[in-house]
Length: 583
Image (cartoon, rainbow, N blue to C red; front, top):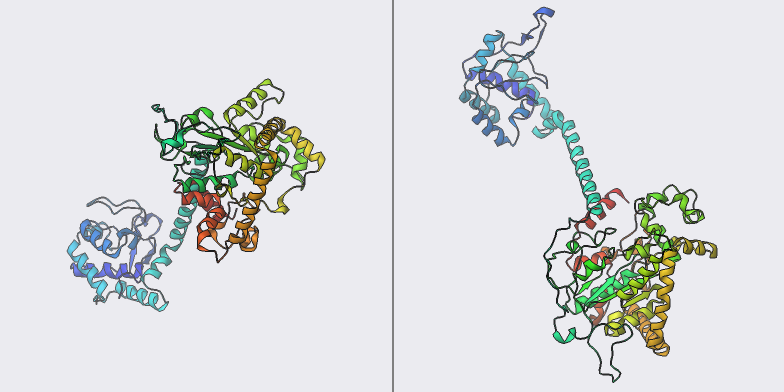
């Protein structure tokens, strides 16, 4: 007979057997309730209830602990002691406490004198099925055990009958507690950047290039090749200011591939895929950063802080960024980030964009959570106040400052021309700027801006509009300096090579809906609550020469960062929470 087949019956049998083994008389079938004289003593059955408490007096604690640990259970839980601990030796009984003996205090004293050796011997015999005491309590114990087996339950089943509900409640509490803790930790990690610690300033070398010859000469915006055709050396130290909703993920893929090819050192964020945006960039946010360390490339999302970036990168670093027509950028940002901008939740109607632009100041709050996504987002990303008056002279001063700091400002609307200028600026090869369009939205999620909405969006983002107009003019001056015919020829060559790579790498030759992507490693990051970002399927049969390149060109940002060894625990935790909650 198993010692755990029925806790109540086994307890009575073991208790009676121990009494007999110790030379004490067996307990009668009924006993008066302690303290019941004033109410009229009522006999009650001696068979225990699940809540019955047994106190073990002077029984050896060490011996019981060994037996209990051998079963892998708490001794108290086997005998339903509950929250109350066994009394210390000779401790007085608490009020309302039940006794198994018929003699009241005398019976209790007798029970407390049962030796530990007798108890342990009885327990061993109970476990081996050797108990033969013909006492009513023991017979009830046997019956309980038999009933437990006949019902199809074993020791564990019977225990679960007693303890199932508390265990289920405990498990639910643990799961909910874990989820809540993870969610709060995630919110804290996203909201609070790492503590900025004062650091010893150590000068950064002029160049972090491995070859001294590569460090010669500063970046020149409109071509670095000598007129004599002597060629130039590739620029390896690059700061790419990654702005939002400007095809910057495609440029990031180009930089990742170039950095891997030349074994360059990236300054990556620690814990997530951005530098604690929308907080300003700080060097302490860089993974494995130590003062004086040399980095070649920094390119993840940040809120630009020029002085901090300058202390991280060498003096010969080339600064590059990309802009987009503010009206279309606003439309893209409004839809992509809408679910994480509480200001948009109260917008009535189906066309929330049109409703917002009808009277922006009715809905917009400069202090609202994530409100920066709704006004002059480019200006904000570049480190300036996006809520300042567009007519302030500071706006023009800041634009001039951006022009001085950045060697090239690309334009999304002229993406291929921008890449040709980038290739010329950095002295790269055509193969270095090949690309597939990443993180593109499917057409059904794009709002078609009418001329009226376009004007409203432009007027609402007036600072960004001024910024874009300024760098649109400088862009075409660079194209003129490069040569329009030469530009047209190089753009055609780039497009031709891109089409060739599509036919080699992409199954079907085009992007597909997220639900049609076959490999999880090719799944792009999706906005909250929808699957609007397209991705690609890699061809099954690709020649050996292009296999590695094809996969890298199609790998989304998060997966590529993981491949490069970036610590993304916060991003992955957020992804897990989203998957669990079906967001």
